[in-house]
Amino acid sequence: MKKMLSTLATTVAITFLAGSAHAADEVTLQLKWVAQAQFAGYYVAKDKGFYEDADLDVTIKPGGPDIAPEQVIAGGGADVIVDWMGGALAAREKGVGLVNIAQPFKKAGMELVCPKDGPIQTTEDFPGHTLGVWFFGNEYPFYAWMNKLGISTEGGDGGVTVLKQSFDVQPLIQKQADCISVMTYNEYWQLMDAGYKPEDLVVFNYSELGVDLLEDGLYAMEDDLKDPEFADKMVRFVSASMKGWKYAIENPDEAAEIVMDNGGQDENHQKRMMGEVAKLIGEPDAKLIEAAYERTAQALLDQKIIETEPSGAWTADITDKVTVE
Image (cartoon, rainbow, N blue to C red; front, side, top):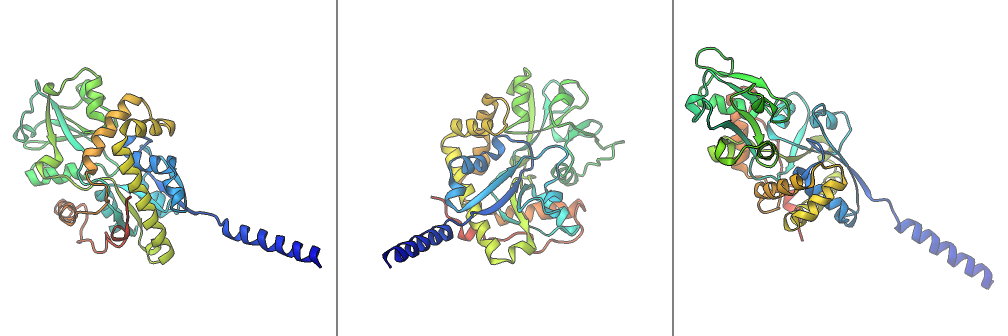
């Protein structure tokens, strides 16, 4: 009898342990670009165990020039993506039910830079010249800005010629364009490494000019968010991610090292990038500023990038429940 009771107790204990050791909820995050400090918060959250603490098993998929996050999530290849609002709203109008669930970046990092010894000193000098612009959804802020200035992007008299810029600074170095697009945290510093100095450049910062569109938000699919379990998973994901961003901002050198461990290039560049990205995030609460959303949507409408005013394109339901220790 004692042997039977002992065996029964052991079986119950094993069953209890097996039941308690349930698998963590899986989340796949698709980034907008390659592994770099632009996404440090997510890599830090994974490395420091913040996702694990939130009972999440997160896979981070880097992006690249041939990867469109909107297409990845539409095809079921991700649960959540990092995307710019312009691309997300354009995709939503085409039937991809993207919803902004969090907005880690409060400010935009996009700039247009021109050599100070070149022909462009002010926006009035743009007509008749060639401006380098990234595409694949990155062109929307530029076109919205030109529309606001009343400058044609078709070239000719009074217009500008748009160069489809490579994702580097070579078009300026090789004098293929009079101005090129850069990010404050990335290509701007590539120009510094190439021998330029800040005083050598005329800088048009989108945020300072008030023509910035929202960048680097987190987006999930509308139908998925209707599932309470998925929504809860996103609350835990955003909370852990912002904890990662908070740690990265407070420990930039360590964050850069973690990015390097995940495929980042040039540690000094990653450290500089981390410092600049921190300026765009500000308070790491991931809350979307509604006025910035409205400005972004209106700019896209004015340029006819989207035809109808978006509805349901963002929600505060996730960030209202987010906690960052």
